[in-house]
Image (cartoon, rainbow, N blue to C red; front, side, top):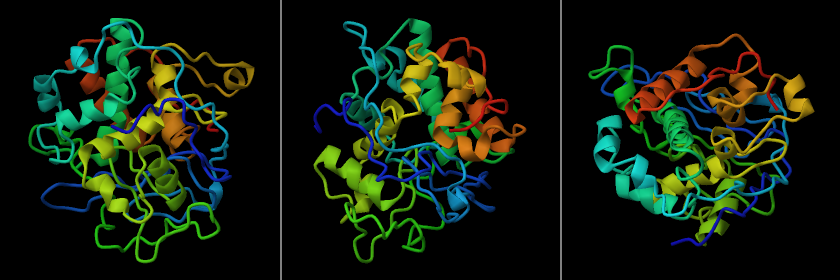
Length: 321
């Protein structure tokens, strides 16, 4: 096990974007058609070049500060509660019938054991809504579905394990050569990998320190070990990066908007998690297909988990960070 990581603050190496630069042009198909799985940017980078099939946030638009977060989610798990209380193996299998073998149920539980507040904080309703929100965003980031896919598009989450088109080292643009703390290794690429597409050399380096692994030298460890893959996503989900709250805190009622958030239209709900993940590309604009896809997955999982979806599912009226 990797030790407790909840108190670790994400290091964005002074970049100014601080968000996931994910998937403009998503909607990829398994077994045919153009795939648009995109590389996301946990922590963000100003001046990112657009990834294959996905919109990195060119020129650093999207703002926000990725560095100096509070590190870790507030609150603690309910005594005796476990993630498997609300997400059984059978339910997980029904949610992701076409998932890649990397995303095994046991791998998720192993990763979550390092984040004991995940899926165990708050009321039963809040616990289930958090899980629906996390899985909904991850399913969108990794979807292999299309509108007429067998079983419906919601059945194809967790299909891709890395950014489509980058599998053979083609995506060299995710190297911030100015970052001397986490320099790029020769011949390695730092494109999106895992459930919430870990990207950029400084994020691989920083998260590798959490695990005690040299992910700069071997970034493919993220797609070789399911528990590491899920840990990258949970690290992002549970860790506040000022001025952004942790998505965990938003979904379990531990975050309330301050005056600046209120002025910017930021309110608790699933839409706020989209703002945290990819607000610079998806929020503060008329709701587009990317947000609708996230919401569709969220609603699907909320229904399967038997919990109300709550309010404020979209982010069109929210300013991004």
